[in-house]
Image (cartoon, rainbow, N blue to C red; front, side):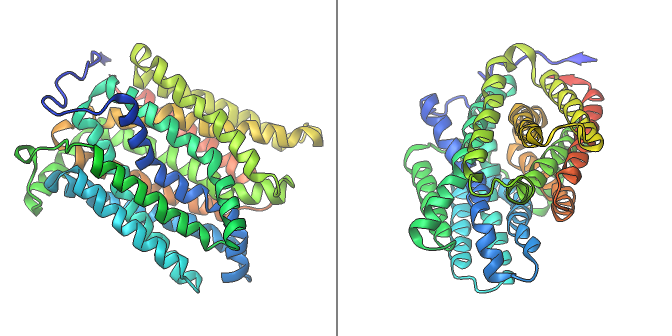
Length: 413
């Protein structure tokens, strides 16, 4: 096993004016948070949308979340290469434009089919800020310094879900229905795009841009896919996203139908997200000292054992009735805590040797991991049977495989 020394990041972003770190992190967290807000603020609206658009099959309302994620996965194939050719700011701005158009269409949707198409378009646009922001960070930082910055961004990104369902409930009450949620999405998108364009200097100068041609794209794609380490980290992220999105898509039903906490769901979700957000804080504090790979291995090992214990408790039925919900709450919090600890590290590891094609590399890694994660998340969500059992088994399997794969990687960072 060979070690890669920690990079200082000094050779990244040379000559580019950097924003003060607090503002830079806050701005990027806002761009990232569009994804979390677009998913989690929808959760309180799903029962109303199901009752209005699909009253005969309420489980289909979960597809409103997966359609957004699928669109985001498809969009990531294009966002990175476009940013490599045109610059980061133009690519992110174009993504916000698509996102806002999708929000307007969803606001006016009269059928589940139109709603799903609009959400797919929103996800397609959200791929811009999600992927190009990672390339923007890589333009300025590398290695463990990139992981540290990404961890701070992910900390805020994970804290957004703490309040998104509550904000969604307030918006629904204030506007008289679920359609007002999409007005909030439009406002959120405008804030993000204005902040970026008014404050952030372009990080990819024209001399470093790559032409958007089939030949150049194919060459970059071959380089990314030929790297065994990148492939492994991409599969690990697929497993991580798959289990996280499966839990998200089923959370409203689990809290409401299984555990009878429907009315207090936004508050429980907020508590869960706040607790899980400490994972990113912890990672930012220790990643430079411990290394990205070591932390990820430890996180997936712990998650595997926690889920195994949860499965054993569920199968044996030894928990008294009063303890079932606290046990579930702690388990589901651990899933999001693990995401906060690992996702920033995995992204930095995957892009560690791809700085010269950061946009393409970020696109391929995110596109593959996001699209394939739906192969895990959608079936698990639709398998909801009134219990948490399908999710527990799914998380256990995903975490165990991710742990095994991480131990097979050979570089550290």
